[in-house]
Length: 268
Image (cartoon, rainbow, N blue to C red; front, side, top):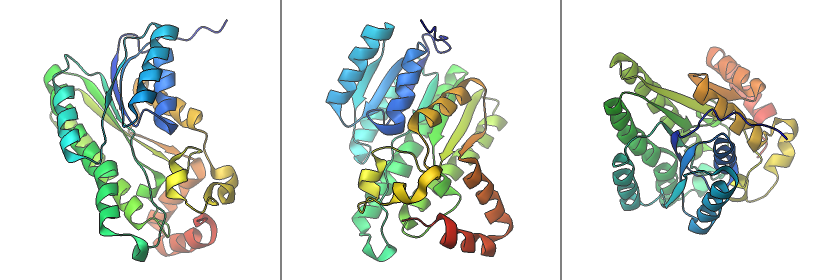
């Protein structure tokens, strides 16, 4: 029998994008370690099944809230619900999606919806939770960004822009909270491509993950690093290492970086 350390026993953790992919992998690990989760996603049936399983297997006091983060009114109602909770120890903004198309193929509605889910909603939630956590005297906000926030590749104009905006918002928010001595931490998780249903929507041709080969990350591995970052606080987590190194190289030598992207990292 494998004993799991209850590092998050009775900790109240809010998680968006919880019904699939990386979000579900994070939720599974946190539930196993004793967390009381508030799972947020659109698919109510999936969330209900997850909560029931956590209750049965881990005696969890988890619950869920069904919300479409592309709906501004729904997000406002979600924030009102979250701010009325007695306490929130961790807020993890994991929901997001992508569209891999040339700039000329993207419609204005595509850009608006993508920014609403990837940027504006997590920013609004982060703002509300930062205020709540500052008042309660503790808390930790984790925003799942992307290596695309640091290195843009062809066919990711809007996606890269949306993730870069969330990444820089998180960096500035971290500094403001540090200056205010609020005891509220901010972490960004910046993964490369992960083997999740994300690519069923983002890559309609279905070749991207195959072309990437060993660059593709497993969701459980990224989830483990994310969960560990909650305990041993890290400013940011970057995966895989080669992409993290490439982003630093890109800042130093942008022209050479463009060449590397076109010849090595553009697999769409």
